[in-house]
Amino acid sequence: MGPRRVGWVVLLAGLWGDGWAQPVAAAAQLALGQRVYEGNCAVCHGLLGDGRGMAAHMFRTQPRDFRQGVFKFRSTPSGSLPRDEDLLRVLQRGVRGTAMVPQTHLSEAEQRAVIAYLKTFSPRWREEKPAPPIPIPPPPPLTPARLAQGKALYAQAGCDQCHGPEGRGDGPQAETLEDDWGWPIRPANLQRRPFKGGSRPADLYRTLATGLDGTPMPALAEALSPEELWALVYYLDSLASPAARANEQRWVGEEARGAMVERMHRRMGGGMPMRMRRP
Image 1 (cartoon, rainbow, N blue to C red):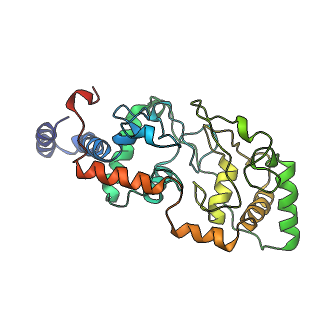
Image 2 (image 1 turned 180 degrees about the vertical axis):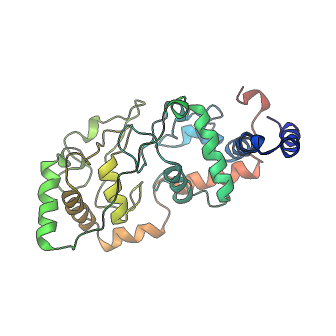
Image 3 (image 1 turned 120 degrees about the vertical axis):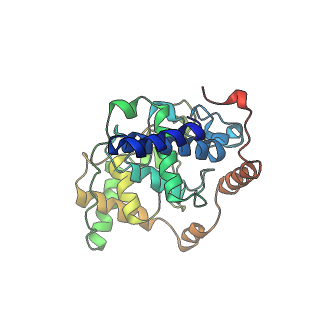
């Protein structure tokens, strides 16, 4: 819907009453979301949302393909769609170590509009609703016994099979892992920081509880109690050295390259040939 057509619909809505207000607002938000997406996101994620934008070949961690409606970073149970607040968190914080850098140059209205637009790429959003989020209970006190419990759970839950006995990402299955799109994927080195989904204890709890859909990282919310999850969080948090934690304040991995691509794309006005535009 072009801006002139949106303008006429808004005018008619004002003349004909409140019944038009909601669909008109939704149409205007989608129009804004499309402009934001094409000007900021399509260079990596592709105009069709297939993760095959012009810059995708530059990155080891491939841009998300939105067409399946599968998302790693959620507060909802495994298999569920994410909530808008989950997608907003990714836009505002980025995905550390990857080319997906924080989109803080966008206003919150623009961020929410592009979230509405990216939902048009997958039929899941029309057929399903996100499940309620998995609650994150208050953390219990950190004690030596709880830390020892977390270390034991790390082995019992099979974390060492991918992440290795010392958490270096070198477990016996590490070389064979793929994501749901067939791309090779490496388990995180748990001694390093930052983590893609966030490094705070609450972030670790959420990742352990919900899993990372589309990857071999399973959800543990049904396998472990909240107390056990917190024990495992404390153990994982203990693996990072002070030097590793300092990386939270630096560009790491592919972040600098992602920021460069985004910056150059915006300077070009998000220019894409009209023939490549989404039908």
